[in-house]
Length: 379
Ligand SMILES: [Zn+2]
Image 1 (cartoon, helix red, strand yellow):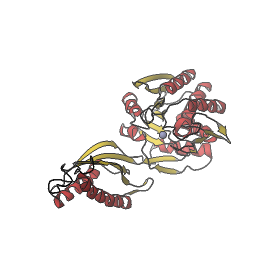
Image 2 (cartoon, rainbow, N blue to C red):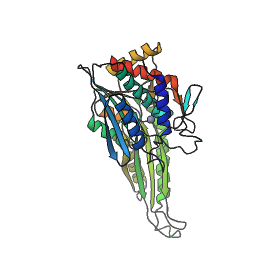
Image 3 (cartoon, helix red, strand yellow):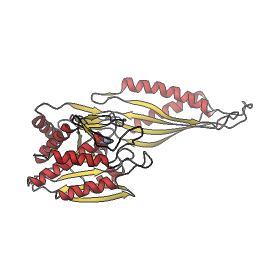
């Protein structure tokens, strides 16, 4: 049995702690305070727990419950940071109405943290000895650069992992990745009246943007994944030029490309480089440079793998229904765990308002999630 009152009370406290990612919003609390809270709770439940400071004010908390047998080790993971709270009227209330608990992070993903702490409490109170090692890990910075997950995989390698990002109790076996590239077009500064001397980097960038627009249409039409939908591309930032009456010698953009499982970084760079070469051939003065900025792999696990099969059976037994399978269109830490060799699947509670101004989680789904995790760990 799991302690529902404990989970409600704990979730309320978790939401009341500001753990906004400080890289995303000034004044964000980071993970130091919420990490200490989780650390104490885990200690109270008799879990061997460590708190590691990765950067100032940024921590990971890792608990290990040793199993007696030789089964594959399992990690259940949640991130402790949240996105910002601008525009929210009462982001840290933890108020409960009609079975929903409100506040920033309630759904993404403090509901999952409460479920994981409920699992730890239940194992202790019922004197359960697991056949295999169970890691309960809580990481920093998923909403920005994932320094937490990157540090965690250097410390812990479980055989299998469940990332408890919100899925409305569906099983997520795939998600998109993304890459960011910077493209800089160089022109030649000149007086606005000296057209014979100037090379306009901004207008050259316009030609490149038109090519990118066509490529984006093609990508969305032709590259498709059954669970994640189409790949996509957009240009979130453009900047160029110095002043009126001067030919712009510099224009830069950032290209954001969302990938589906199976796509490679090399293939995408070839497409972008191809556009640059094509324009160079057409216009001798055209000059552009492509630079990689960030790459985050897409992720997919075969639904026949043991960790997915076990989760499937646990859902059936707790919910009395067959689970649904989904893909996420955004990137998650699961790709880092997958790349580190852990067989990883994603599942979390029901709710709404992710990264929006009103966010909530359905409490009943937090209890069900805890039951599902417990069953998965036990079996
Ligand atoms: Zn999240």
